[in-house]
Image 1 (cartoon, helix red, strand yellow):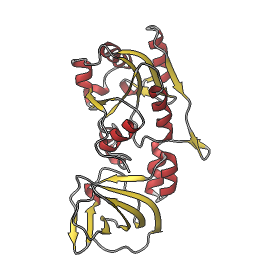
Image 2 (tube, rainbow, N blue to C red):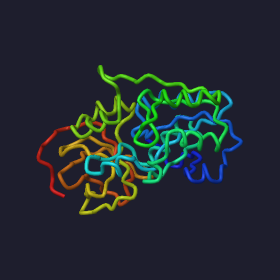
Image 3 (cartoon, rainbow, N blue to C red):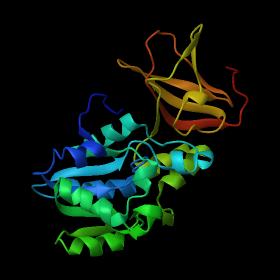
Length: 277
């Protein structure tokens, strides 16, 4: 279970580049969306965490840019922002810089983006995935970044993609697995079970049952069916049968404590007739 309260220093992009609180810090950096923080992402994080005498730092987005660029095609996040920060902290990251994606930010060239980072910290090591792209219309590749940063004697390591079952592991594959009810496959790609963060989601209480509307969730919800899951409150964990319908998620919970997480462990029956919400 992710431990709420795990701390990591969090800065906004505007504070990082405007006030420059890390100007004098020697930084090992990796950049990406990091939705799901799967095993491929974890190899990048491991490299910066194991870089001696540098502050392991992740530059990522507060919200997935696809929410804004292609909202009609975006099926949801894999991790909430809270989960992302906790997982990064658990892997040894000390600082996370969050970009609020905007129309203005999208017009920033790759070179200007990199120069803003250089001017805001003592960047001495940069790790990128092979498919990394940045700048206006994604025109600057990881290999372009390496050439740009060579002029400043800043090493850029480009990590090869991580494969799973014969193809590149990606957040897209994890989303597809979750949407198809392949809970075990998603867990293998992430290195942990899939967890919905429901801490701030309104919960309906009826007799000894709880339910939440799917419309209130920003994460991917597996398809209708019955699942084996753990319901976590601030003080305890209860194993339940979780019914997912077209409209909601429903489970039995006799106590009145608010549930904060749903951890999917397996699917019991896909497409079975579930209790109505």
